[in-house]
Image (cartoon, rainbow over all chains, first blue to last red; front, side, top):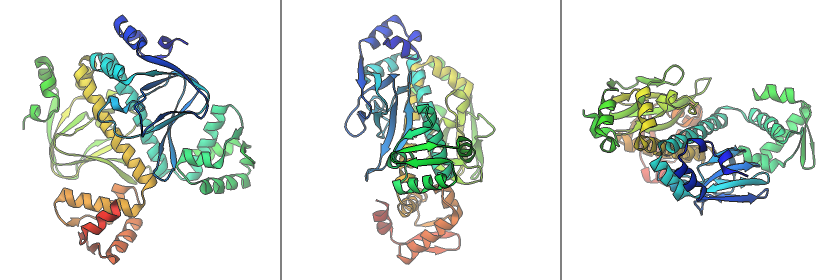
Length: 218
Length: 218
């Protein structure tokens, strides 16, 4: 895999900057379920996804999770390099949600580039603005959208990502994505089943009526 | 009031940049309660607070509010200039919470500076990282901290900001800050009153036992 084809502003860098960056990246494969960055202990570096899928989430003191965003091919993650900026004072965990190939850009090298290149600095600002907009959207969802809407939107999104109407996912995992206890998820899924929107089996959820879920999600 | 004493990276700009910036600012006084930026309609510009206090908040479709952050002397606000960055796709409202003196930096001028000056671009990134950290903190509070903790922390913070143990604030206003309906606020305040932590009167809340509130907030 060729880093230069994946790094979004590669062509805008000078040859010297391109060379410097190339010398400060690590290519890595991570199998599904691997924790790539653990907010508590490390400043891993910036992540650039070549293939696969990463999930970024927060963890409460008592072990509850909330998915913040997903990263796909060509996506970059800043927040696994919080040491790079003094004002980034929060911790996220990043795990491979599918088998993933990625590059890790060393934080000190990226910081140096950012401080000398107006292109890299502006790109970084745009990247942060993108994530910021996603988090504000999430905050609005949590505060102002009822759980049935959020759950139906989540099921449809999962179905799209997996390209299947049968989802192999536990109620606990869904709860971790949405920041709700498992019981709340189970209760709502049973309600959906009664309505004919889904069919629940051991370890799977089959979407029977996507239109109905879509209407609910809107 | 002298802009150069308030703009945090003034001394790091070149004389030409300083001059350009000076030509693209507007000084404004806003009385308490004035809406300075309404996310729905405008790209006001970056705000720099000279004196007073601003509040940034979100508004739901059905009129519910949530305070995102406050801005004090020397603080800058980016999100009233969302047009400046393509990835900033969310809307906030900014109002003067006290009589406020501020500068508005024209968004096109700031954008131009940011695209040519690595100093301005890096400063903007740090500024965004600061707000991002605050929003993540808020998200954690809302998801994982019970309402009694959030309310006691809010009362103590207000008391500190107003430098008074008697707060002139309605239950509805508190609800707007914390993203909860008025009834929920009233119920919890009555509980606090029964516990001897506060005393409620018409339009005011007196803090009787800050230590007790502090213990609850932690």
